[in-house]
Length: 441
Ligand SMILES: O=C(O)C1=C[C@@H](OP(=O)(O)O)[C@@H](O)[C@H](O)C1
Ligand SMILES: C=C(OP(=O)(O)O)C(=O)O
Image (tube, rainbow, N blue to C red):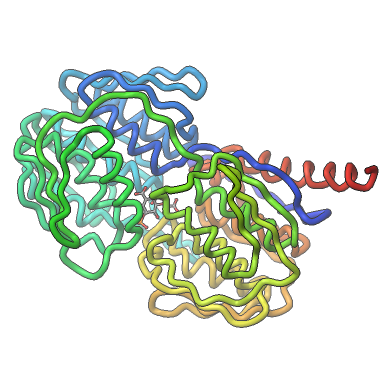
């Protein structure tokens, strides 16, 4: 875990007016790394995200015998002829590492132990992130699983000819159980016939991303009905892959235009994407911002007010933190729903948002599956981040328009965006320069 560092979010001196290049997608990078490790030859990944979650993934793969060499933003990945078990793999707080790597370890002849951090809850209470569905799924596929409690740490004992076959899991706590099993399924001796049984699965676009990336590499995967996937056994093609910008990480920058009545451009915006963060364009339009795409340049232009919203974020729960801050600044009461499962993310995100937004003066109530947010006159306060990168970017967004929002820790943003502070202050410096330029013109 990085050492913590307090940070006072800077006020926007002028409405923002800048172009911000967003680093690569965490979700796509970690899938591309797993698939390259499982592939039939060496692969190249360009533009992968270099952050804590993807560092933990690279280190974990190396521990299983994968060779990864890094030349700036070009990474070469060479799979081993056979995976070797690892004494210990640290997952940090990375859901994609703790759910995507164990199915790879299940192909190693021997025992691999996975460790990591616990989630920090309101009041300092701690809780492990859910793992049940994935571990039950791996067990049904033929791996031996030893687990002390209900999450990290656990030990997987695998074999290169893991049988696979029919597996039923409840993936309502996180879509990552389904994605993790699908990513390795083609390498199981009998492939994988996977069904989800239980309440609805969140973050569907992330499962679509998994399926698409498998198909892009030649894997045959059928979806005969909802919540049922059949992955045929076979090879996963190696190749050269370019990673999209992380659209969830673009969200706070784009939202900066909405809260300050300014304008933000983000280049390389994909016309079509399976990243849930792509929904930020619809979310900002609902709040009243003008959103346009010219080629691959996305522009958000803020207007003079933020309209209240009623938002179902079940498919795009990564956007809850930004949406909650926008709601706290809107013209009347907003509702966010469909996100009960984010109580099991990096922290209990509903409790964290309720605590922090209440502390700055909003009236916020948790519901079964979301938040009701009544905007009030907001004031400065401490903003607790609970080791959650998205609580950092949410606090920074609020700090653009409310003086003296003091984050207890900014370092945890390195989970997915180690350059966040530079990008954020760079956005503000560029906005001031653009204003001066316009004044001179
Ligand atoms: O598969 C992925 O890359 C992700 C799936 C989602 O998890 P949940 O299904 O737990 O929401 C998302 O929120 C997370 O940031 C990344
Ligand atoms: C839920 C998130 O991360 P993870 O991949 O660790 O689940 C997130 O980035 O919002």
